[in-house]
Image (cartoon, rainbow, N blue to C red):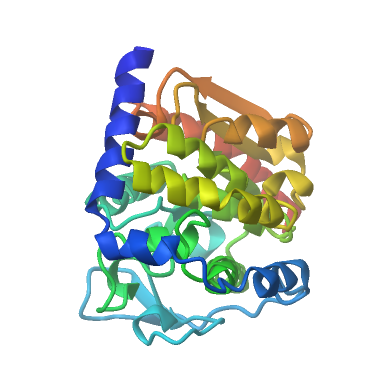
Amino acid sequence: MIAPLAKFIDRSVLQIGYAMLPQSTWREAANERDLKLEQAVQFLNGPDFIPAESQPAQLDFDPDAPGGCFRFPTPRPCGFAENNVVHGRLYRCEDAWQERPVIVSLHGGGDLPGNQLGFHLFARRCLRAGFNAATLELPYHFQRRPRQYGPLSILCQYSAVISHDYLQMAKTYAQAIAEIRSLSGWLLAEGCPAVALVGVSLGAYLAGLTGRGDARLASIVMAIPGTRMGLMLSQAEQVVGRRVREVILRRRAACEELDRTPLNLTLARPAISKENVLLIEGMHDLMVSIGPEEIWQSWGQPEIWRLPHGHISTVFIPGLMDRILRWLAPRLEAGRKNNE
């Protein structure tokens, strides 16, 4: 894709996304009351952010929903009942599914239909390749979004740029990581020989955070991931509107402080070999800027695919799903043999 078109798509999505946020969001974000930054930094640097131990989830499969739909209670409950139930779907291989590896897909931020459709199509390709697949709804997305929240409220939950409470933001990341680890633990306990994470955008960032402390994973694929909170400031140059830019730039010091915590993926390498890590970069990406490149350098230069696309257009590259599966196949097979 030509660079101007890729950047135009990314810039348009950014502008539309920020424009759709209620004006009250910006008024609250501009209010420099106590945002619990100090408590958030303490939590992120402490042992409770990503505990050493993780218990397998207790999946409850819904017989009235499409095949393989499940739910389980989050291992890190919050104050919203809807968000305390994790929803997902397990696509099983027809024969002896427990003897086959599993690929867990983690979607990008926002309640976008494309997130669900894209991973449904990817799951079908996984089955044809001989792998089980699982999808997971991240905190505050889809069925988990509290009724009083707007459709784009996820931006406030995950983004240091417009967060109303940094401590809640930090605990949202911790909740997501705990759920990914819990599902992985259940799959391994069921006998599946290997588990890989494939994430896009926000999902890729969470896959990276999870992989830094979980050596059980066979492989991690991170497509167009963010790296650290400070990179979000680069969005200010792409967003039209004085109020938006002022709020974002006002958070510079807070983002720099958060970037000294484990939220910064460049501060530690993953618990698995770099040969089992794949980074996918959109060379014209306006949303995460140099994120994949920073991870590549700090993680010892694992394999990286630099594609001439933007953040949005990278997801729709023809043949990319199958190419990822071909890359994963030998690594999942190696993981299966190691666990025999």
